[in-house]
Image (cartoon, rainbow, N blue to C red; front, top):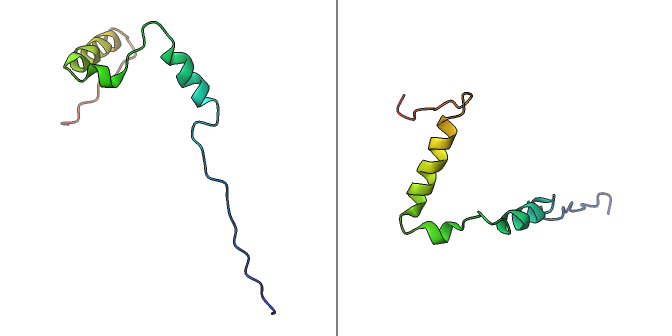
Length: 68
């Protein structure tokens, strides 16, 4: 056989393999962490509004309107 076809294979990419897994675990241990599933009762909107209010206080925050 003159030409031999070799298949190139790559290891699957693990997006959590670059230290992200440890960062997520550390954040989940923080006292003020929240779980999205726990917030689906309406407190998610309240929490998001709190985040936006805090962000708007930042002088470098730029609000982008999807409507424009």
